[in-house]
Image (cartoon, rainbow, N blue to C red; front, side, top):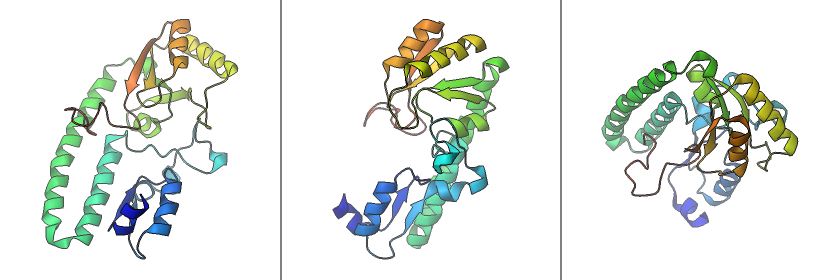
Length: 221
């Protein structure tokens, strides 16, 4: 990694403290003056930071998962386009054209998500997930995140945590709960069994779906 960083012309990170060790390594390895593009810090203001179950405000680090929100992903693409155009001005039109194509596809995705959410009864527009990745997505589409099973220290939840979530799901009569493809957990299956909620365990929240070479192994996929 250090060798790659030493010859890099640009480092792109999500930011909002998500890759702090990588950034520290980069600062020690990269050539002086090499830009680091921190997307999350550029995409939203401090006033727009969200704090929640796994990212409490008293810890000082906001939820960094902007990218599940397609409009935030489009903002990321715009920031990357601008930076690449600055560093490689001769090919700026190439980056602009690619961004325009991506923008059209993101707008289609955004419309599809809105249509899908509209089909869900309003009382069911509540999310319980394993990994706390959907704060900005939920805000965009009028959903509320009622909890995340994975604690802020990324351990397994305690027996009390599980019991509290089971009670909450029963009280809200939630029809489904959502796991993570990246963070599989038997706890979610247990919660499903004890509440009768359907368990959907394949959300691609911190990684692309499938594997390299698969047709849907992409952000839009």
